[in-house]
Amino acid sequence: MSRRLAILGGCGGIGRQLVADAQAVGWTPVIFDLPASIDAHGIGGVEMHPVDASDPADAARAAGVLGEPLEGFVNLCGFMTASEPLLDRTPQDWADVINGNLNSAFFAASAFAPHVTEGGAIVQIGSGLGHVARPGYGPYAIAKAGIAALTRQMALELAPGIRVNCVAPAAVDTAFLRGGTGRSDEDAPLRLEIESYAANNPMKRIAMPADITGPILFLLSDQASYVTGQVLHVNGGAFMP
View 1 (spheres, rainbow, N blue to C red):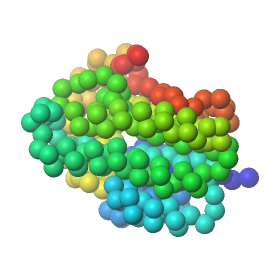
View 2 (cartoon, rainbow, N blue to C red):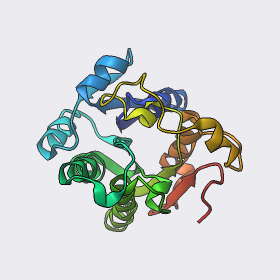
View 3 (cartoon, rainbow, N blue to C red):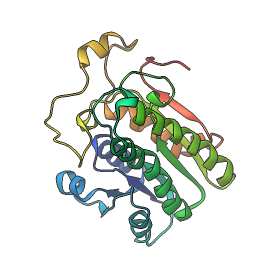
C-alpha cells in the first residue's frame, strides 16, 4: 500500500532526488514549493502545490489542500545569502535568512504536522553549520541550530505517535550553493571551491543529493521506529560530533 509523503522544497536538487527515491520504495510524494521553483523544475505525474512557507497563512493554506492523511513530511526549505561577518549583516538580511529558514520550518511544522497520522514521521533538514561555527555563515548557521532545537522539542511533544528527526548535511552539489532553487540564478558561480572542499574532506568529495536522500528515507522508515529527536550528520566525516 502506497504511503503519502509531503515534501516541502521538493523541486530543489535534494527534493527532486528525494521524489524519485521515495517513489522507488513505495511512497507517493506530494510536492510543495515556491511558484518559481515549480515553474523551473516541476515533476510530471507528481501532485504539486505552490507555497511560501515563510508566510504562516500561506503554509496553512497549502497544508489545507491535503485531502488524505500523510505518513511522512519532509521539510527541505531554506536558503543562504552571501558570506559576510555576522555583525556586518543588515537587519533586513538577518530577518530574511531567519524567516526563510527557521521561521518557515516552524510555520510548516505547525501546518503539516496535524496531517501526519499516528505512526508517521517528520524529517527536518538542518546543517552541520548549525553545530560548528564557520566564518561568514552567521544567520544561516543560527537558523539551522534552531531547527535542531525545534526537532528535539517536536519529538518530545509529538511522541509517541509521531517521530521527528533532523538530517544535517554538509555542502551538497546543488543550486543551493548558488543561493537556492527558485531564489537565485542557478547558473551563477558556486560559493564553494569544490576541489579544495573535497581535498579537506575525509571522503575526498562533495556530497551529491542521493547521499542525503538515503538517510532521510531511513528516518521515515519503520527501520527507524525507535529513533526520534536525533540529528543525523551526513558530511563525509567533515564534522564528527
